[in-house]
Amino acid sequence: MNANLYSLFQARFGPDMAACCIETQDGLRYTWDDLERATAKIANLLASLKLQKDARIAVQVEKSPEALILYLATLRAGYVYLPLNSAYRAAEVAYFIDDAEPAVVVCSPQNFGWVSQAAFKSGSAHVFTLGDDRRGSLLARAAHHADTFDTAQRRPHDLAAILYTSGTTGRSKGAMLTHDNLASNAKVLHDYWQWQPGDVLLHALPLFHVHGLFAAAHGALLNGSKMILLPKFDSVEVLRHLSRATVFMGVPTHYVRLLAEPRFDRSACAHMRLFVSGSAPLLTDTFNEFAQRSGHTILERYGMSETTMLASNPYQGRRKGGTVGLPLPGVSLRVTKDDGMPCAVEEIGAIEVMGPNVFQGYWRMPERTADEFTQDGYFRTGDVGKFDSDGYLAIVGRSKDLIISGGYNVYPKEVESVIDAIDGVVESAVIGVPHPDFGEAVAAVIVADPSAGLSPSHVVAILKQQIASFKVPKQVFFVESLPRNTMGKVQKNLLRDQFRS
Image 1 (spheres, rainbow, N blue to C red):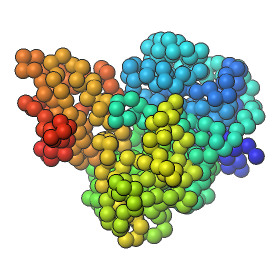
Image 2: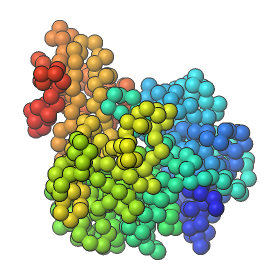
Image 3: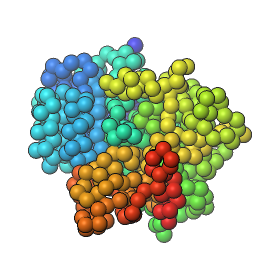
Image 4: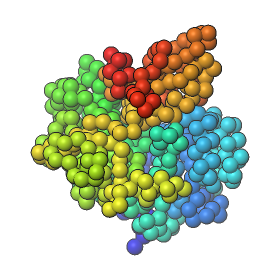
């Protein structure tokens, strides 16, 4: 039996191939037959390039139906999909291309100049463009190929995707996910969230992220459900389409912004079945206000690039605010002390996970991979949490200083290295502070040479040229010195307390 993930989805297409599969914000409609034929054309194009079996296809494009079709075509052709955040700048993209050595790179037309330069320098043989307006060299080339394709045979443990996740040292790591990792998680979520015939997904998440690509799109594909694909989250557009959808998945920021809309009420949600939140902590106040305004209780879940989804509040049963719910079926979750022993109920410790959803390791980093797994095979998530007496997991912190702002991961060390390179900066510390909209906001605390004349706006302007906008600090503070302990380590907990307001 072919373990190719595309085969799993393909079996759910239809039964009416002329039915709508994807609808855009502007009313364009793609049928299941369109999806089948379009993925075949792109898969034939990729196959014609005579790539190696494990060839990586790196993609940095804006969200569109064609971007999703490219992902599915990559799976169908048997290659490894490598999505890149569309906000990444030249230096960031160059690192990913150098590290992953993709055979094919697909980028937005407006970025072809600098992306192709980085790609060809690293040995990539092919660079295509794909715009969010159905234009670009990828579709032009694919148009000449046949619209049928025999899905490539793949084994369960063959790679399907590599997702880069930043590291505390500043060096990003490529999490290797197999066809079985993704298929097993899709099946579990399909059952656990009780996808139903006739469900319609309102999709407002990015397609380069675990949440939007795997939790959301996989769910709809596996259920044979239509997706209303919005290019980005816009509360007005979401409200416009809610009456025709049944499922919505978002980050806490999305729910905060929906609550800010006066027209958001129970009548706006009357047709909805399920609201899911993840990628960042959901404030209890938001959880409670949403239930009161909408009549729906948000289902909060827990996942990460290395594991896809690993815990969730139940579809039927109590959904507890401030928790990420129970371990998913087939997933083993534990909270341990420093000595590796299990924590008692309500005792805080390190969260570790084992299951078919857990990745195969970090791309070309065997030593780092070994360090992240325990001797008995559990993956160390780097998160800190506790179980309550009902077995619900609450995440209380992150041992690696990860900042999650608006659903995006920001690692302080990466931002600090860019700040420290600015003329006049002596040293810096990047921290996360509470933010009513983003959950957490990135803030930078800087020690600078007084003669340099640096200002917050000057620092931000420089950073915007070098790193993705979600990593750029929302606030910049200048201090005379950073607090340190007796070992010389910066005490970020003191900085968070000082600047949290």
